[in-house]
Amino acid sequence: MSELNLAQRVKELRNRKGLSQEDLAEESGLSLRTIQRIENSETEPRGDTLRKLAEALNCSPEDIIDWKIQEDKGYLALLSMSALGFLFFPLLGIIIPLTLWVFKKDKVKGVDLLGKSILNFQITWTLLLFSFYIFLFSGAFGLLKGLDFSFGPIKIVLLIIVTYGYNLMVTLINTIRIYQGKSFKYIPAIRILR
Image (cartoon, rainbow, N blue to C red; front, side):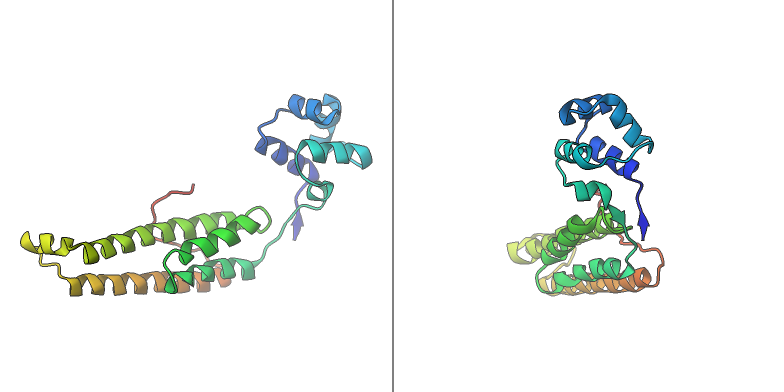
């Protein structure tokens, strides 16, 4: 585990709220020079200063002092495996990873990038899958057949099975690669989350 510098944490929290140093000084009741010293690692906020700073940043004092980024390959592998929820219901392949991503995206190294990659892939896959279902159940395959593309319900069902198999393969391969500390690739994916 490597502890993130307290000064960086205060600056990050301030930027997330869209505040300048002057705005933070005004909201917290601290002087601009105090805010500058904290962000330049010249001083560490304690007691009343820490409490005022935390209130102005809408967080607890512990969030400022004890914030850490941890490396956890197990959590990354769990995040990757969570996408297998699609096997039970397609939207679970999005909901479960989304929940895990939101919960730890700022606390575990690599979760933000991995979560976005998984979610972009799962959203793309789900859109593709639902388009196959629309063709299957709307009778559109009859229109396509009339245009001599020869798509029938059996071929669309086979496409759905292949689509499920591809998602399963991509998820399992990437989970293994993540656990081994290697890079991952979730493709194809529409970049919805950047």
